[in-house]
Every structure is written in C-alpha cells, then in structure tokens.
Image 1: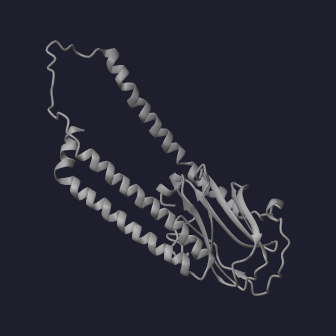
Image 2: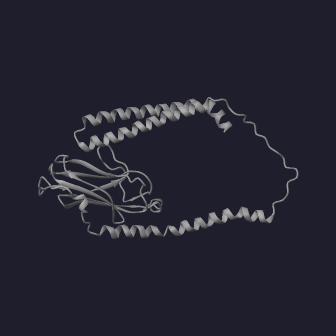
Image 3: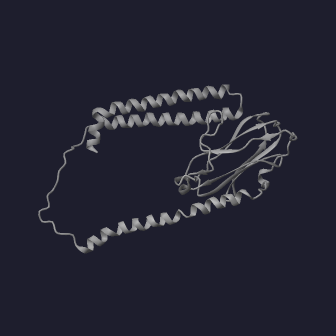
Length: 272
C-alpha cells in the first residue's frame, strides 16, 4: 500500500485525476444534452428514455467526481514507511506430513468444484430446450392486467412490430446487440417495438413471466399516439435468475406481440 501511495503521489496521480475529471465533465455535458432532448422530443417514449438516461449520467458524473476527490486525498497524504523488512528463521523445521495433508485439502476442494462446474454445463441444453417448450404455449391474459374498458376500437390496420429484446437501447429506441440469451444478474432488459395505426383509448397490457409464472406487468389505456417507437423494460429487484423470461403484449384483449429470452451464464459463456 505504501508503494502504491508513493506511485500515485508521483507521476500517475495527476493523469488519473485529470482523466476522471475529464470523463466526469463529458458525462455532465451528455446529461445536459439529454435534458434538452426531454424538452424537444416529439414522442413520449423518447422523452421518458432521455430522462432515465439523464439520471444515469448524472449519477455516473457524481461518482466520478467523488472518486477523483478520494484518490486526490489518498495520493497526497503522508506516505507510510515503505521499507521491506525480513526475518531470517535460523531454526526452521521441515514441514510435517500432517501439515502437507492439510495444505492439500483446499486444492482437492477446488478440483472438485471445477468438476462440478463442468457437469453443470450440461444444463445449458436443458435450459434452452425449456425455452423452446414455453415458446409454444399459448398465453392467457391474467385478470389483474385486464382492468380497463377500452374507449376505442382496434383498426384493421393496427400493427405492433416485432418485439426485440436487448440490455441496451439507443436514444431512438433501437436495440443494441439484440439477443435471445442473456447473462444472469442485475440489469435492465428492454423490449423495443414499433407501432402504427394505434388509437388513444385502446386498452393495452404487458405481462412478464419467468418459467411460465407471472412476475410483473402493467395495464392502462393507450395515450401515445398513432405511430412511433416504443419500449417496455424489466429490472427485477433480485436481478435476473437462471431460466426463461417471456413478454406478452395485449391490445384490447388481443395478443399483439411476444418475445422470449433465456438467462443463463453458462450459455452466454459458450456463445449460444
């Protein structure tokens, strides 16, 4: 730690602080641009997405500034004594066989855990097959997400485009690296789509399921205009667990869009 303090207080510290401050100011400028987008965007979804991204950028810039301050305080404090001192054991005894056995126990445990992880990889195919099985099941709109009476009728030309899943989207609601297999853990899953010939007053609902069980959803009257890009997102408090997640989108009681994704770290690592 003392060597690190000396190194930081020497040549690296000014560059590191400058980089953190530069990135912080860039993120702050991006958040100001997003604030402008929230005022000028013609679509509700775009304004909402810009507001969410602005909040994220402001949080990132605050973290960067705090990190720069912490590194500055740490780097300019008085360094500790960095001299290395060693003691020579003149009467050291050879290691007994019992000690060698105890030292070998952690190695055997690591080897066993490695074999368990290899055998666990066999569940990748089972997880992907279960996803295909769920994809063939006809969903039913739960009663708790069918609470409104529609105030408008569906047009024959009303369409909801393909629903695409991704963990990132652009400001124009275009998916970044869309996929059907995602990692486990805490992040936001976005479902993007385009719509046309919608009518304000239609009843629409969205239902998220994990392994066929309802975990989240929503129901409201449509107030987002005739056409444009849209999105729905899911960010579970416990994070995404291993399994199959699906999304159904309903308009006036009719299933208009679906998407399915598998959450499995081993499958992602294998490139599936």
